[in-house]
Length: 430
Image (cartoon, rainbow, N blue to C red; front, side):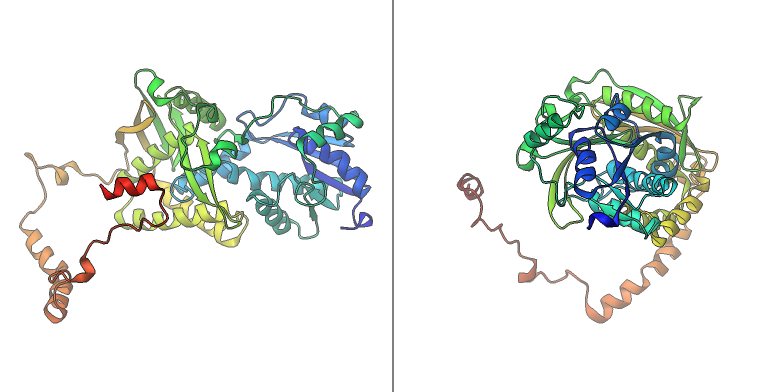
């Protein structure tokens, strides 16, 4: 990009080493005015003194936005209502924050009359896609600059020297062996020894949760939902951020929310990630339990398809697509009856459903019971089975029952050992 193409850039600024150096680098390399935007999405994402640090790095203005409430209500709750977990495991904490930050970048850029926005993502991760795609969807006229992806290319030591030469205030701390991202919905941890998926994650990969074996005696918490979103804990109605923070602390103390996952990144590689999401784990467990009580079988079946698609679109950075918008609309409609209470036992790393109830429950004890008061017409089951099994009887009569004759296709084939370590081959041989 030519220097003359930009006059003012809004940089997503964390206050760490990379983005502090990026302020000066953008000014020097592109001859632009740099405005910084720091977004507080909870979980310790807001560093102390971030505004002062941005100005010391050469920013002309420094915005610091408390977006925690907006993050929960506009991004986390729709994702929770959809039961959206990427590949059935990842609670999408980082992925959910990116469209919000992109939205705020565009808002500040428009307010400041900026020509471009910038972020500190590398060329190997998912976040670069999420930021670029979201920004261009919201304002196609804005350019996106990524110093860490192209151009800057400094090592950590070089960045420290670069900052020292220019008098830039930076947080000098012990270099973590991991790459970490946090917000109030979850913490992600990668790189270092975690890049070997065979090795167990060491204790220092976790910060929010105690080891399940060290957790205290189990406790129970009752979560109240209205329209598919949590509103109260143990009968106490709480604002959204406070509710998440309360469950975060409670779940972490009981070792809940650890996820060790090898996932498929958008850029085409597999990555081993360690996640901590105490509140998300508890709330997802409770929400699914309440849905099982209040939604029909067909709605639950269809919702599982929607959940996977919702998670994929969020993970891939397509939050602002028409499909994502329309899926959110469907989810919100389906959640109208998901109201009630769920009791969750926090037990040494596990969130276990202990009970659920709802005034809109589809569970009818008189139909379900095998005891006195059974209202189910057992005799009607004969006719039901006759009609239900009719297509299979016709198929079996014409084509033969599948599995009736066991041929070679049913034989078990042992695993291929050619590429396994010798120790594994020896075990397989025995």
